[in-house]
Length: 279
Ligand code: SAM
Image 1: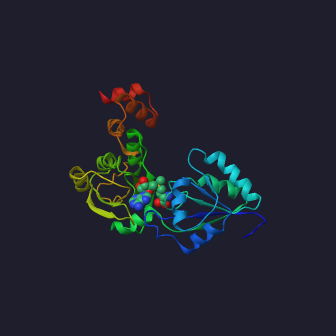
Image 2: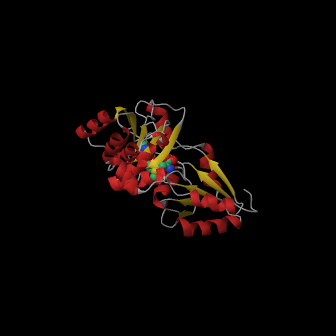
Image 3: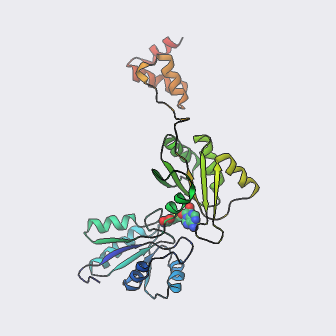
C-alpha cells in the first residue's frame, strides 16, 4: 500500500447474509492499518467471521465530526483506513459523508469498494419501474415534518425509495397514502436474510396486511412515482380572478387572512381592495 499518504476505503459490508461480501472487500479489510466502524462490536462479528484481525476505531453519528479530524490526520501520516458501517454502503443513511468531504478538501485519496446497498436491493426486487428513481432514505420522525416532505414529493414521477424500521412503518404508510393517494408499493423486508419477503400491492392493501400481522424487521419501501393520474396541475395564477386567487391559497392550507394577504401581494393591491372585491 502507498506509504506516502494513506487512502480511505469506503467498504460495503453485507446487509444480512454474510456471504455478500466481495473478494476485494476482504482483501482491503485485511490490508488496511485501521478499520473505522459505526459500531465496533457489530463489525467485530463480521471480522471474526472473515478471520481478520485489525485495530478498530468507532466512527458514528455522535463522534463523527471530532473523529473525522483524527482519521484525516492519520491518513496524512500514511495510514490506510477502511470505513465500514453496520450494513451496506457507508455514507448512505450512515456516517461517512463528512469524512469523505474532509478527505476531498485535504486531497486525500478516497476509493470505494462497492457492494451491498439495501435501497438498490429493494428497488430491483420491487417490480416497480427501475428506469428512474429517487432515494429519500428515512422520512422525518416528526409527523408535521414528514407530511411536509411527502407533499414536496407528491408530484415526483420517479420511483421513490425510503428506509424504515418496524416501529414507524405503519404511520409512515398511512401518511404516504394520505398525501399521495393510492399508489403501487413494495415492502422489501429482511433482504438477504432468512425471513426475506417482498410484499407488493397498493398502499391500502399493504396497510391492511399489517393490521393482521404487525411489521417485523428492516424495510425498504418502494413507492410508484406519480404517473400523472392525480398530478396537480399548477394553475397559472396570473389568469385567476381575485376570488379564485384567494381560494387557491386557502386550498394550499393558508388561513383566509393569509390567503388575502398573499393575493394582495400577487396583485399589487391593498388587502382592503382584496376584501372589497370578495364582498
Ligand atoms: N448504509 C445502508 C445501505 O447502504 O443500505 C443503510 C443503513 S440505514 C441506517 C438502515 C436501513 O436500511 C434500515 O432501517 C432499513 O430501512 C434498510 N435496510 C438495511 N438492511 C436491510 C435489509 N436486510 N432488508 C431491508 N432493509 C434493510
